[in-house]
Image (cartoon, rainbow, N blue to C red; front, side, top):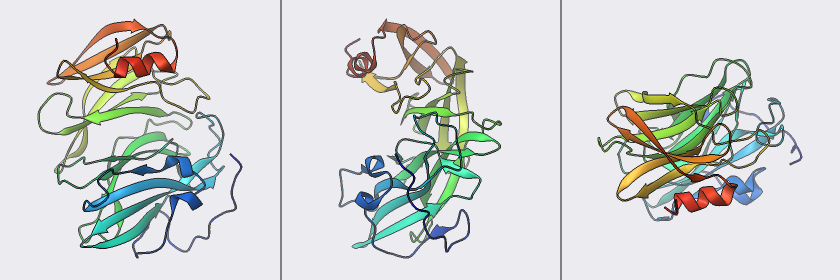
Length: 266
């Protein structure tokens, strides 16, 4: 997409803008990034999207060199609807396709899971949520940055993969290079902490504006669906305690084969 004019910056970098205000994803630089909680009458976050197009991080891993610098949300609290946002510092962007609305800490209100990349340290997975007064957003926890500029991670999905009552999130660390599947768990006390990892997985090819993976529940067991490094086979991985076990579930033949696998067709 083309780069939109710079947005006026009246707040400090990384500072939440807390006042209730008018906002619409249709006016965003990234309208297709909108995600909505189907239960729109619920308390807490009900929608999220990216905005603030910038070319200050010219990686282009998702097909172009335009990334987002702002995260916007709509929240419901006590009958009042508020629009809030976080504006990243000049050294960061949201190197992502869309935010993810997930209740990470089990408080029955949604948080936002997003990919944030730093112009020196590369990508990290971040969890944003509302402050205790519910008037603004804050960074609640994040994985360590990969450590080098232009190194990225591709999210797969979330769920309680090992049945311990905590929400987990899976992603591929450097899907074009290291190809490491990592699973992090989240608790209110510790934030994000790594549970397990294994090499030999990917879910993205440079320049594609989609991610070839997801989470499925077949036969009552949650499985992390990815692709092997040669892009020939679809892999399904389960987590037991802190151990990953992987099986081959069929041939990879484009994104439709991933969709079929996610519907338990493989």
